[in-house]
Length: 569
Image 1 (spheres, rainbow, N blue to C red):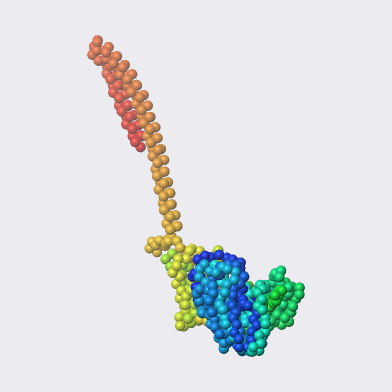
Image 2: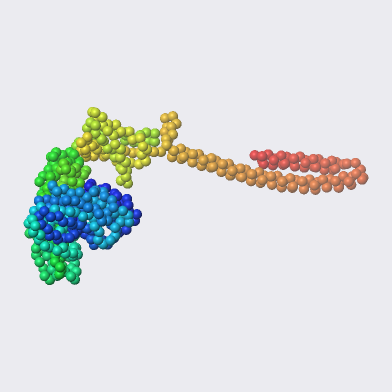
C-alpha cells in the first residue's frame, strides 16, 4: 500500500474538497481502491473492461485520486467511461497514456459526499496485445473524507491479474469476488516512512469463507503472491536480508477461487549516512564569533533528515539542511571549542563527527578620556580608539550587578566618542569597554574604570557650591535659631512680668501701710482740731501736729515715687 501525500498536481482537488465541506468531524475509517474484477481471462486481440472502485468505505467521502499502471507491451487502453461513477466533478479528467502505460484521475463528490460502502470511479476498456500473465496495478492514490480537513483514509490499493492467451485461445478464468485483505504492520506501520529494522511483521483479518492465503514479499512491485498457506494464516513475520523498498502482498482464496491481491509497501534502511566533509572554510582558528562550517553528507536510500550541532557538550541545535552545505554556528565567546556534528537519515540512523576550533579575541579598545565623576548638570563621556568602522560596547555595572549598555561606532580612523545622554542613577559604577569589528570578532573587555555618579541638585553662590542637602541643613539650623531666640525672649518676658507684679505688690503694701498711718494721724488731728475749734485758736501744739501731718505726707510721696521707679527698672 502507498499512502499518497498532496502534491501540486492534486492541490485543486483538495481545494475543491475543502470548499464543498460544511462540517468538520474526526473519524477512524479505512477505504480501499481496487480493480474489479481482480482476475480476467482473455486472448490477444480481444477487449475487456475493468472498473476502478472504492470499497470498504464507512464514512462520507468527497474526493478520490489514483495513478494506475499497466504493461504497455501487453495491453492498451481503448477508452475510459465515467458512466455510473459516483464522482460528479473532475479536478483532473480521467486520462491515459498507452506510450507510458499509465492511467490517472482526480474527482470530487459534491457535498454531502459519497457514503456507500462500494462505489465505482471509472470503467476502462483494454485491448490485449500480447500473450502472457500481466497485472493492472493501482500504484498510488487518495480517498479524502468529507470532514473539513481532507483526511486521507486510503488503506490499501489493489490490482487485477490478466491472463492473456494466444489469439482465439481464451484462458478461462472466472472472476472471483472476495474481500480485499487489509494488511497492517506493527513493525512498519507507515508505508511512507523508512525504518531501520529488518525484522518485519504483517497482519490481516481472515473471514470465515477463506480457505487459503497466498503471500509474497519482494522488492519488485509486479511480483504476485506465490507461497500458499492452507489452512490460512493471519500474519507473517520474517527478517529481510537487505535494505530497500519492499512489497508485502496477500491474496485470499475461497471455494470459488483466488481473490484480488492486496499490496503493502514497506521501506528499510539500516545503513547510517556518511559525513563526506566537515571543515571550517576560514580555518579552525578564527576571530569570527559565528564561524561557518561546511558539511557534506549523503545517504543512499532514505535520504538525510536532520543535521544537528552540539557545541562544547551543550544541547544539540537542529539545523535546516542547506543545499550549499554551509552552516553558521551560533555566537561563541573567545576560546577553544568543540562541535559535535550529527547527521540522521529518514530511518533514524545517524553518524557523528567532531571538530575542534578556536575563536581568538581581537585587541580591546584604548580609552583616552572618560568622566570619572558625573554630577547633576553633566553627562558621562567616553573617548577612545579602536578598529575603524567597528561597534564599541560600553557597559556600566552597579553594586547590585545591574548593567547599563550603550553602543557607539568608530569612524574611518577608529576614533569613537560616546556621550551618555540618558540619566544614570546615583551610585558608583564599574565601566568596561569592548569592541566588535566588521567581521563579527569580539575583543576582551578593557580594565575596569570606576565612575561616581552624583545626581543631587547643586546651588551656586559665587564661588560656593552647595547641594540641596546643604541648603536644607542651613534652613533647619536657621529655624532652630529663630525658635531658640523666640523661646528665650518668651522666658525673659515672663520673668520681667513676674518682677513687675512683685514690685507692684510691694508698692501696694507700702501704700497700704502709709495710708493706714496717715489715716490714724488724720483722725488724731481731726479730734484735736475739733476740740480746739470749740474752745480757742490753734496753739503751738496744734501747729506741731500740722507739721507732723505734712511731713508724713511728704514721706508717703517719696516712698511711692521710689517704689514706682524700682518697678519701672
